[in-house]
Image (tube, rainbow, N blue to C red):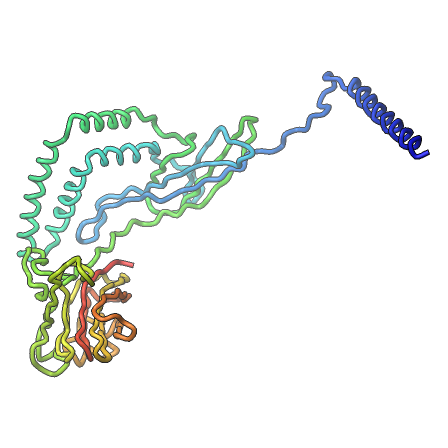
Length: 411
């Protein structure tokens, strides 16, 4: 009986399979290509446009911060959703009143080709940049001694430029010629380009729109408000003279590592009320062996008695924010500390340097948990406020201490 039932079930299943197959064949024979839209769904999906942009504005200013020239340029890159590829792009630019603007368009490949030329002429470009920097600085410099040095440096650079140009090989010259030919052959940028550079006429708010059309002729539109900010001068990085206390590191190749760090008056600025305040110099006689100095082979040394100080007034830009970094090292005989402060330029003596009203920023580091004579870096942030200069002032106490490798950056 069991065998018979199993055979019956197999026969029944086989019959059902045959019935299903016959049904499919019958239905298939009823489908006709002549029946419009049978089995087809209308494609109602259109492209979803988007774009990215970056500000590539550049400007030039004189030493009085007067704008000489500027190009308010933005790089735009269009795209659409991955499911529907856009095949046509159309940009539009309107001002804050909604009026369409004719703007300057630049082929996206132009900056790339120009950078490739600069790379071929790297040495020449570097010299030209140094020359341009000196030509900018000389008319702005009030110190006649510095002007003499810079003019001498300028003359040397001009000779070096001629030598570098004469040393160009035929291969380099040919590469540059080929790149220049590519620039001349570039197509003019149009509002139909997927990527382009738009130069706006002036600072302001603009509406940049993008329409993307796909290969089914379906299109969609997106737009963004683009704010073009007024170009501002780059805040110059202040100069800290003899920042690493090295000999012959002043602008004219002179200096004993301490000249820029002397106080205006020993008596006024002495922590002990009198006597010399000039820092000492610690020299690394075996660079590359053991605990090296952070920079160069000299560092400022402050005896344990706390009678020596470091003082330097530097120029700053009002309203700017800065970060000063430096290194300290200590003996470990007993507790010791090093204090570095940024003081108002009106501070005239050691007593005034302790007043809160004259302290713009300050930091005190100790030798607790420090390793004997191993340098550690610290940072000190400050705002210039209304000041056109500030004073860097350093003192120590407790143990012999060292200070080295000052650096300053604009935040």
